[in-house]
Image (cartoon, rainbow, N blue to C red; front, side, top):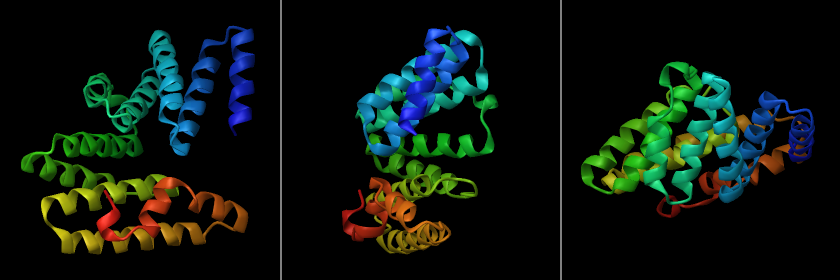
Length: 205
């Protein structure tokens, strides 16, 4: 997939196809995010965001800016993440993207550290897993990890254990639907999924 997006981006640059360049950068940014290569992801998502903004493509700009804010949180740059999140055109977000918005808000509240911020994080993470239909396995896994972490920090350890079991069950069921054993193993090896399926409750943070 990375080679496809790289070739697509290169071709788009040669013919000065700005929309194609935006798509190429967005695709590469998403792939590097999945791999945990946040510095590389940030570079491509920044390019995609600027391109879609210049083109006036509000939906695509909102999507890339939302992902950029997530990457900035992962890079321990919460101030910049907040700046990007505030620029997201929420009316342009799909239902799926609004749940991702709630997840990123949850991460930022969790970063705040106060009791009130942690409770707000719990609420946002709960909202992010209300409807997981159509989401990829690793996305579902990281949202459950977020909720379990917030519950632990709030002192609700029993509920955290229950949510951890629920998340594992949901992701394992999603993985069981994948017909190819090799593809299933590759997806199960993603860091977000490993963290949910392998770690003990005390390790999820």
